[in-house]
Amino acid sequence: MAAEKYQQGYPLAPASVLPRSDEESTAFRSIDDHELKKKKRLKCFAYIALFAVFQTIIILVFALTVMRVKTPKVRLGEVSVRSTNGNGDIRFSARVLVRNRNFGHYKFDDTIATIKSGDATLGQFVIPESRARARSTKKLYIIADINSSSANTSGVLPLSVEAKLRGKVRLMKVIKKKKSADMSCSLLINLATNAVQDLNCK
Image 1 (cartoon, rainbow, N blue to C red):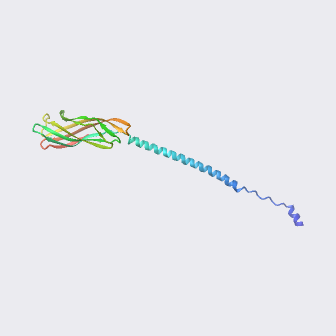
Image 2: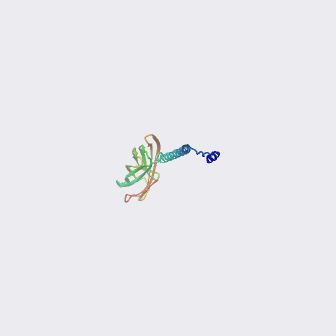
Image 3: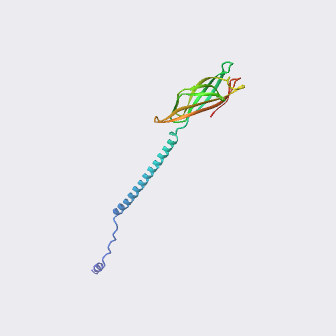
């Protein structure tokens, strides 16, 4: 009986109140969700910025390569000559090369090329209207009859061949740009052997 009175005189200490585990997990989960959403947004912005930079690079490369219009080049190749008689008449045969370096075709009008020796005009030939495809070389064969009797020469006949092509480069069937190509070639003809020497085109 005394023991019961003793125990009643000293009440038991209240149990410590612990936070509920579900409240803690909810709070932590809320923080984690916020951080996760923030990271996802940052990652999304980074991807958008990277895509924009990539698109800008693609556009710049496209503008500097594909859309850039270059001047075509025209020159002579495989020239051959043949004396037709003893009066200085010469049959001049050559291949005209029109090199188109653009990503669209180059359509040019017909033009007249002049064959000279010094200041004397010995003959002419026509480069016919044609079209050079994109990134290719158009080959045209020409024949001209020239007379070397008016040229002051002794065995070797110096010649110059000049022409100016006028045309348009067409890109993607939409963009048209006028472009002219100049031909300026020089060569020597050995009249004794009909050999062509030192062909040079600028």
